[in-house]
Length: 247
Image (tube, rainbow, N blue to C red; front, side, top):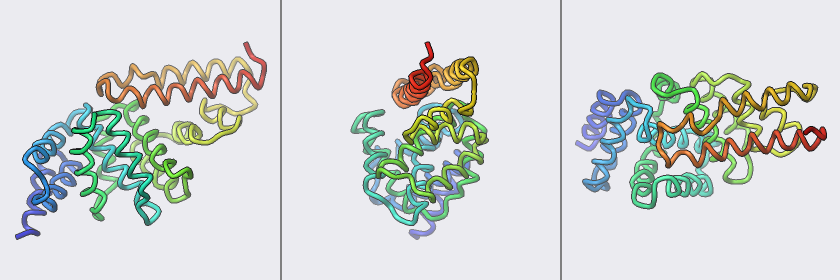
């Protein structure tokens, strides 16, 4: 009976929310005894919103891809779990974060997640700017223990490819989590040999690409992460300006 409930939940979720809904249904089916009526309502809201690139869809996508990245090195680090929990508390408040984290605890125990299928669904319903924000968040998770290891980098790179994030954008986001002047150039997606004029042009291009206004549709709760990414771009530009004595 338990197995039937589990797979019935997965089938129901998939019918209403594609691969993401399927994972959600599987989790609810697997842990139904531990879920309150409010948890189930919350889960249904996520599943039903997955056809839209709104807050619920983005939230569920974060939970699933975060679980994939955290498990990529073969262990689950408490610091990475705490990063996810704290991030959700900052975005949504303690009550909604608790509901989300209960789902996350079930997702991270699921070994049958198809990363490719999940990313295909995300790709179909989310803007390029939203997908960039997902990758930025995943690097933040990987760096929560103070070190982004090779397994995590490889997994985020694979996810970026599935999300149709090109290597220039991927390397730019990755460089935001490393120090050094050379990384400042990578953030702006240019070579160190670029002229001052090319540096300024690259900065304007990055400002336009990553401006927080592009994520207004996700709601106020997601703008903090977008603004952090925006500050990192500004920091990279200021670092190059200082190095070159640019005005």
